[in-house]
Image 1 (cartoon, rainbow, N blue to C red):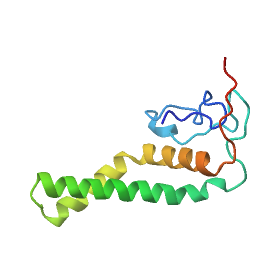
Image 2 (image 1 turned 135 degrees about the vertical axis):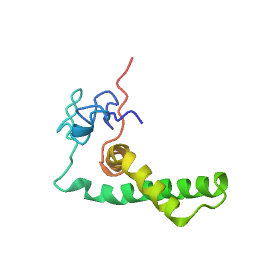
Image 3 (image 1 turned 30 degrees about the vertical axis):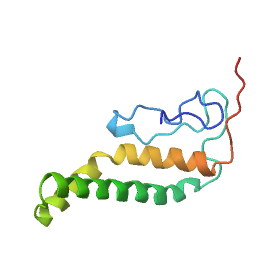
Length: 116
């Protein structure tokens, strides 16, 4: 959840904080702590699109259920407008977490405890 390296869990995967909207997608090439490459091969993160899609669908379902329960099944344009607004608001988080999850699941490097 903190966006740390899958090997050492100390170095940041992304260079800038998510609040810096113009640079939320800039990743470190290597972990600043252990030096592992954070893009194992060219095009590695294309598969993260599927993770991103699943996250977006989960948000849309959650928003739909919340609107249905709290607002007594509003007009379909309310559903569409609110879902689009929510998806646009969470783009930086969706982008980051889809890449982080994909790196953790398929990156090939596992956590190596070197601590005291």
